[in-house]
Image (cartoon, rainbow, N blue to C red; front, side, top):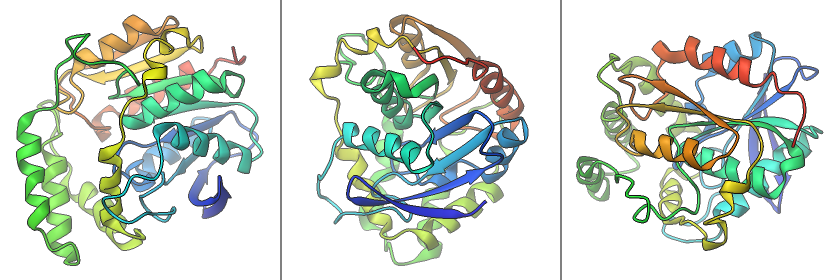
Length: 287
């Protein structure tokens, strides 16, 4: 297990692998503004110990991958999907199972549509339909209290590690569902690691400028790869209805509901999630 940086699509993408490369590959794709450290190392190792070759990576603008000046728009979700395929190429993996958290689930959808021959299965966690018009589907929006909290970020001294870590930890606490006790020690460790390893932490906010692409509005319904949709009933960023919409519109999908779980992969749910992913990734053929 060690980090590797590959030149992919003209930029640096930082990656890390767990387990035996002869086992079926799982590519973990994280959500907006989150580097790969938020795929908890212990979670990755448990998934690898179950018999999978697990790869996590930093998307553009987070962690040790290439970053751009904060406040700029230099790429699209499709570019990020191409980066994910490039990670597979860098590891000489022809076909893999994709597991995407939040925005990562939308990136996985683009990969599954554009390159179905590379995708054995797809799992989305706390995600939604990419390219879909939420208003047309009457899907609920993010909790406005989160907008109010993150407005504080504009007055934060982003060079002050303690203040930034406190701010990010408190924001993560707001995503924890009522079924769980917020694991502050674990999250603080991840957030501190993220602060120390980031090329430019503020660049993560460039992810907030990403938008859906009209081309994909009706294309997601054509994705045939087997899909597992995992969604918590107390998700405050992408409420549970977004998970139901995915199952409704992805033709070869099934739902795992996490009662009382928020926008998170809480350690209390790891066994259930890992077992479900292991069963789901028993798929052997790409569509």
